[in-house]
Image 1: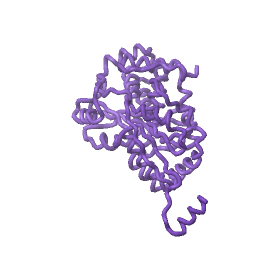
Image 2: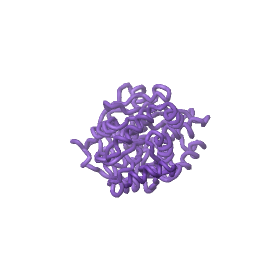
Image 3: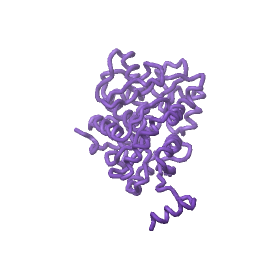
Image 4: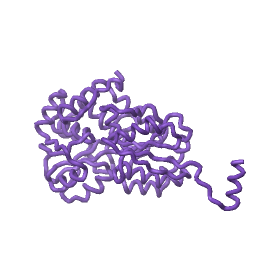
Length: 349
């Protein structure tokens, strides 16, 4: 009877509702980076999915409550897709959270980067840089580049505290204004906001970036920017050796989780719509018009879709060792003053 009724409606020209609207669950409020990204993806993906995509914003402290709510209450809903970002990846490593990437299937993720700018002419030997849980990889990078090789975690902590002014308490708009005024000598942005807020500043220039994670676990230069500005490249040019050791492993862990998971779409394992969503995203990623819109906003970055996204997640988990987790927590608490929890249940050794 239901099929007959639907057929009759079509025959007489009465529009029927979509088979199933989808919902992107975003752990931020309107106007923030991941929300804007989700809106762009929803707009470009809808024609290939054949269904409307709604945006549900669930903001909260450090963007954790929204992800927890999806994990605890929504992930069994077949049309609810979690949109996570790099800060969620950092929190997964060092805070008590309910969500766990190992329990989900990837629809897809963009393999992104974070870009650091500086004031033109500053040698950055005594940088003034904004604090925040999202800036942890930048703090590690600055410590490595300033302090050099063959140091213990305690020595890196001492060197960082002696040389870096870690400016706490700034909101995003305050941070950007302080950098523009020269009150901060360094700042960091995702590719989209770097294009918007740093590149147009005639007094700013590129300082460093973290490189792009590859399927084998290595990092390569970001060709959206001039060659030679990846942290590892800057380190080797200055110190004559490639970075290595426990502190570098902790940096690689936190930067990779932050940037490798910076913009990602997830469903619960066993979701019957997974294949449909993956196919739609694959089609979108090959559409010249859709990709042009994304490149204009973010730059030219690769998509890891479906199984490739799961492989990215699995490769990231191989970076999780007890030593790297311990060093991450120690540097967070002693150098940065951040609350950080040692989570040995994540470690592989």
